[in-house]
Structure formats: C-alpha cells, structure tokens
Amino acid sequence: MRNIIMRLFVLTAIIMMTAATSMAQKGNRQLDVAKNLDIFNTIYRNLELMYVDTLDANQVVGTAIQAMLHSLDPYTEYYAEENMGELKELYTGKFAGIGALIRYNAQLKRVVIEEPYAGMPADEVGLKKGDVILSIDDSLMTDKSVSYVSEHLRGDPGTTFVLKIQRPSTGKKMQMKITRRTIQMPSVTYYGLLPDSIGYLGLRQYTEGCSKDVRRAFIEMKDRGMRGFVLDLRGNGGGAEAEAVEIVNMFVPQGELIVSNRGKLARANRDYHTKVEPIDTIMPVVVLVNDNTASASEITAGALQDLDRAVILGTRTYGKGLVQMSVELPYNGSLKLTSNKYYIPSGRCIQAINYKHGKTSSAEHIPDSLTHVFYTRAGREVRDGGGITPDVVLKSDSLPNIAYYLASSGLDSTEVLHNYVVDYVARHPQVAPPSQFTLSDADYELFKKKVMESGFSYDPETAKYLEQLIKLARFEGYYDEAKADFDNLQSKLKHNLAHDLDYHRPQIQRIIETELMTAYYHQAGAVENSLRSDKQMTEARRLLLAPDEYKSLLRPKNIAKK
Image (cartoon, rainbow, N blue to C red; front, side):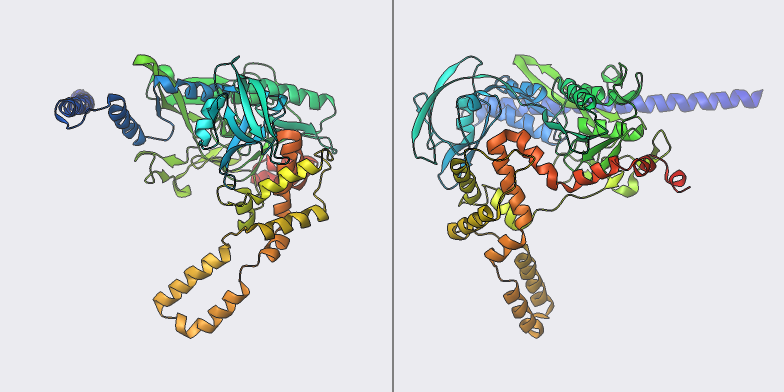
C-alpha cells in the first residue's frame, strides 16, 4: 500500500511539474508577444516624432506587415480595404470586365488582345487575337503597362466604355462600345466523349459551383454510352475544398470521410463527409496529375487513390497540404491565413514543404526518407509528404529550348509565332474542327521561312553545357590537352536554326496548332485538339480499355502478383 501511495505521489508530482512547465512556456510566449509589440509601437512612435521626413503610415506599417507574413508561408496574406476585390476574385473566380486575356507585345511595344474568352463581352463585340489597344474612352493606352490597361478595362458591372483598337492584319483602326459585366472563367475547360467511348473532362480550378458543372458533364457523357472516364487535373491549382469533396462524392458512397482539417484552433477543425448518393461507383476512372496539381485538386486525386476508386496517372503533384481561412480586420481589411493541415482518407497529409523558416529559399522540401507509409482501403502502400505519387508515373513530353523561346513573348522580341498565327487567321476565315485540324506541311514550311527571316534567336542548351564544361576543364587543367576535341565538338554543336526547326517540328507544330485552335475555337478547341498527341491521355485511354490491368493497379502488389 505504501508503494502504491508513493507511486501516486511521484506521478502527481510529474503531472504538476509538466503542467507548470507548460504554463511557464505559455507565459513566456505571451511575454515575448507583448514585449515585441511594445518595441514595435515604440519604434514607430519615435520614427513619427523624429524621423527627418514625414512618414506614410500605410506604406511603413504595410511594409512591416508584409515582412512579418513573409516569414511564414506563401499563402498567408494581408488584404487592405482597397485590395479586397483581389481576395473576392480568388475565392469566387469572378471579376468585372470584358473577359479577355491581354499581354505586352515586345515587337510593337503595345498591349494587345491575346485571347477573347468565349461568350464574353470581348468576344461578342468581335475582338480578335492581336488587336492593339489604342485607347479606353479618352485615355490613351499606347504607352501603358499591362496592369494599367487591365485596371482600365475592369470596372463595375453594367458600366460602358468606348474601346479603340487597331487590327494588325488590315491596319484598320476600329472602335466599339463595350459593357462590362461579371466575368467568371469556366471551371471546365473542355469535356467530350472520344471515339472509343472514353469520356474526358479538363478541370481548370475549384471555383464555387464547379462540382455541378462536372456532375452535369459526367451524366451527359454517361447517357451517351461512356465506358471510362478521364478527369484531367493537370495544372489545377485548387480552390474550394468543399467542391473537391462534392466531386469525389460522384464516385464514392454517401457518408465517406474525404478530408479532415486539423489546426491550433479547435473550432476551425472540420471533417468533410460525402453527403449524397453517388452517380457511379463502378465505372473505371483515371485522374491525370502533374507537379502543378495542388491543394483541392490533390484532395480529389488523393481521396480517390486512398479509397481505391481511381487510378492516378502522371507525375507527382505539388504537395500543398495546408488550408486557409479569412479573418476580418479593422478598417475593412482581411487576413487570409494558414489555419490547418488537411488529412485525406488514409490519414496522411501530403504537404511537401516545411515552412518553419518562412516562404523564402530556406523553406525545405520534406525528403522522401522522412515520409511515412499509409495504406489505402484495399491495403496499397501510399506515403505522406511530397504530394500524391501517381499509381502510374508517366512524364509528359519535354519542351525543347527552341519551342520554349518561340512560345514565350518575354523571350522572343520578334513575336514571330504571334504574327504567324494572326496572319494565318486573316488568310483562313474557317478551318477544320479541333478534332481534325492539323497544320499542313506547306503551312509549317511557311512558318519556318518566317522564323528564319525574322531574326529570331535562342540559346541552345547544349552550347550552354559545353561552355560550362570548358570552364571546368580550364579550372582543372585539362583544357589545353583536349582543346582540339572541344573545338571539334563546338563546330558540330554550332547553332543551326533550320536544323532545329526540322528536328523539333512535332513539338513546335503542336504549339502552333494550340495557338490556332485557341484563336478559332477558344480554349475548349485548343484542349480538344491537343488530346490527339497527349502521351498521358493516350495511356489513360489504353488503361481504361484494359480492365484487367486497370483493376490490378488498384490491388496491393502481393495480391496483384498471384
């Protein structure tokens, strides 16, 4: 009995010491907070009182706030009253304007229309790719930046302005009256049933109501005889968490736990379950992902993987396992802050970066060696940290350097690709539908000729690496002995634009076709056309038409081998 009493005494003492230590640590943290806030206030009071110039409180304190948030993660941001529209647009995907992508043309040194979105005011009044923006009402735009022009194109819904443009194909100046309205980019870029009865749907982002669009498209394709479904989440940066749950609910039963949010504040914790009966729990599904698949799109892919309901195909996803919430601030501002980590059905969090040291370059990727094994419902091994690893890892075709330069207006001052597309559209009022369109040999030869005559240049990667190798050889003392070999190699790797345009024609032609289909049929047409040469999509279709192989991927390896 005495030993029991002694043990209880020791245990009580340990608990009291632990509690006291915890209270002391909490007290120290509160003291540190109060101390530093007092220091900050005192510094600012002295600056206001004695600094040689008059301070702009918004600028000085705003800079301090931004610096503080910069020490945390990229998703914690302060929005002052004048920037609240940005936050609203982030959550809803809506803004008021004309519905067109604009950009700076390096050759013309003017802001031009890059892409009028389908069914939007810009499209309805007849704006086209390449139109040079001259003025908005009485304000000249010929020497303004993209952000300045964009700000003037936007405004309150229902307001009207006169836009003056110059059409490059004719040189003709035109003006048109445009009424701004609320613009919401479609969340679904394209959906359709392919000839083999495989359905495809590309989802751009998780905006409010996007799950309803996905549901409608899926039901339509299913009614038309869809045998398998490809959900394309490549490049989808996420958005509303609840929309991700709704999409998963299309394929899994009611009552399933899809994602759990856990953080410091208990009342901010939340579990998301499927709420309704699914549309289809049997049809094979492949989800396409890449390194720009993030956040809510990772919840969709990860939950379908954890529940063994879909095969994930592509490359490892971004790894954003954090959730944000908004907190109202005085004077109509708002703080978007990271409040939780989320956990998908297997119990794993797929956050890839440790932001303990801030959002700067010191932020660390969690190494694979420190990740942990979890299990899907069927017993397949999956891991936390580092995003979602696909069940089938398949890289997309890489873009050669010449194609990258041609496609980037910031790198190609000649704008040769842009000019070719604008001229092509002017010469061809109509073209074949996206599922059939292919650039002819003659058209590609004309493009090649225009590139050769334009003065286009780029940095070949092989030359860069050879130059680095020569520097290293000089440093280590091997260059003189191998100089003849280096000279011979340099001559063989000499920049040959005509050769590169021929050698990389498949990739360059795909870029041209995408630009043309966007100009003729908007983004939906560009996506539809690109699917024909999409290596990952081709493999997804093959898997969906091979039921035994598809099912084997959803079984644990030791079972699949039997």
